Length: 97
Image (cartoon, rainbow, N blue to C red; front, top):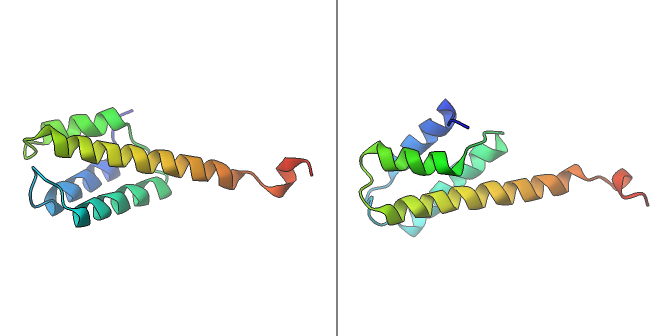
């Protein structure tokens, strides 16, 4: 699944806000989590491999470790949201009580 324009815009925001592309600070990690959380809450879907590919080809990210960290954060947030979204779908009527 190709990345949407909205996702690409957010990836550019991550690139712009990250001062040191070799080491992501804790504050930046929190901001990155928030960016991905906002994406999934707005029903934006993204492929983790596409995000990794985008960062590798973006040009300013020279080390692999920060890219992997961002990819892992995106995966964690997406998985967490999908799990909680699934729980919200179930209502009292569905339990057969």
